Amino acid sequence: MQTSDSLVQLLVEFFDLPADTRPEEIAQPAIPKWDSLAMVQLITELQGRFGVEFDLEEIQTLRSYREIHDTLVRKGVFARA
Image (tube, rainbow, N blue to C red; front, side, top):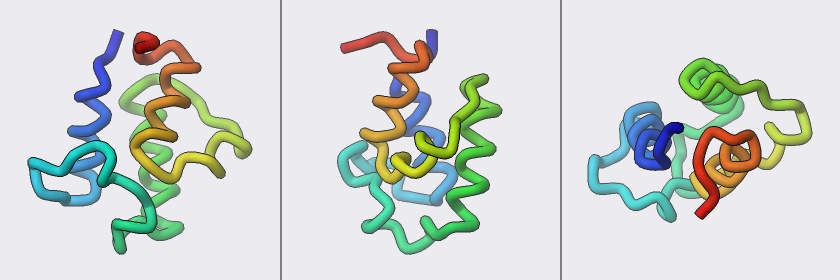
């Protein structure tokens, strides 16, 4: 089972954010680099790293750390809190 820390690390590295960025600060409106192209690349990275597939409906909701985390919990990647 993965830990949610691995998701924070992936997002911090992917968007080149400061290492001390808190999960609640990771959201599309707050990150100028998070455009449509970055979203496609992020989905590919998430699917590869965590071994999951996202359907179109899920992809439309993946706009923040919390939304991504909650979706990965539903897919069994992370334990429920």
